[in-house]
Length: 485
Image 1: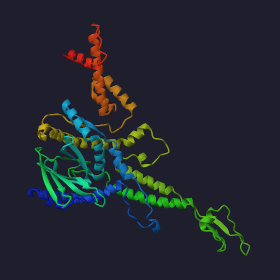
Image 2 (image 1 turned 30 degrees about the vertical axis):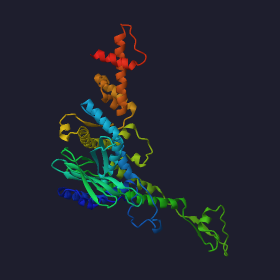
Image 3 (image 1 turned 60 degrees about the horizontal axis):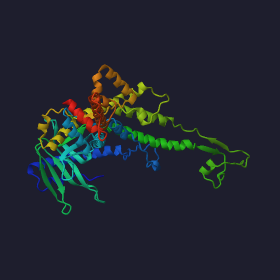
Image 4 (image 1 turned 90 degrees about the vertical axis):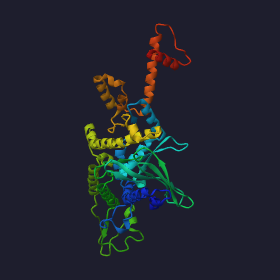
């Protein structure tokens, strides 16, 4: 387990007295949530062992390890349906600027990592800072709840102050001790670093005019009472997982007895087995027993074999409970029905999960919008209010969480375009067809080239002129420009 943020960062040299109390409150918030966050992380990573009831499992078999990956499935099944695909704005220049920020920070991959941390521990945090020498102009970072903390401002409905671990000492036997912690306030980013020699902490202020902390929470199912959301690995999920792990242990032990049913031999001498063990006698090809002194033949029999069906039915019942708690379809939990499901049944089974993904995208889209406005402000050297006042209509774009097939989506778009022909000229049609943002950019470029060639062909048709063979695209652009003028 990683070492927690030390409280002595509140005594860092250079830290203003008015910020000391804020840092202490952030450290206390972090410590109070850390144990539960690591507990849920343990369930996700399948490192958590269930509580033993001490009834049906023999003492020498209680260390039998059985793993149930349902908590990870609860997180991943929803996270996989939330796919960030860049930003769209009302201004082409701003869209291009945000596209460069997304590319330089690998934000699509960063979001996939952040959303899984968010679903594990109820929230994750995105931060925006200016890049140093040799770095991109704008740095967008993501931090899990196990390495960050924040204080909520109910009046402004945003973070009042936040803290994240930026770097750790990853040398062997160092325990990943934090060496660099950033504290975010309305006025500055406070860089608190530990000296490698004296191990003392010192604070450095990086002032900004943003008017709010450069830190945004991605909160799953946030409410007024719980602004930082709740985890997908709820108490009920953990309880059902414990039951499933215990049931898996009992099933494994029962399977051993199922494959070697109990047998008995009555009326035989004590030395009838000779040097053979009971197991050797069971698996031997020939097992001969002679009559006793009175001429009686020993009675050989077998006890009724135990059934695995009760264990299977119980696991199916637990899977149904888990599916009801998380909206994960039963088929994804390993429960297979005898009759194949129809297309309508498959859609109905995943409909609740799709609705959860739509709500997740809507909430995270608001957080990503704030990040985009902050990134534009940092890139332009402006403040948040100024960029927000430009009416850029910044929106985060997500892929369809229903993940329809290409055939069904294409058929739906053809029907829409037949009713609204102008829809074919919009990039929304390409997005609905499943093209990624990069593919749409390439299609735009190819469409522009094709349009230019058509303009050139129509302009030179009656003049007998031909395009220069050296660079026809350049000539096409020149003619297209002249035609527009």
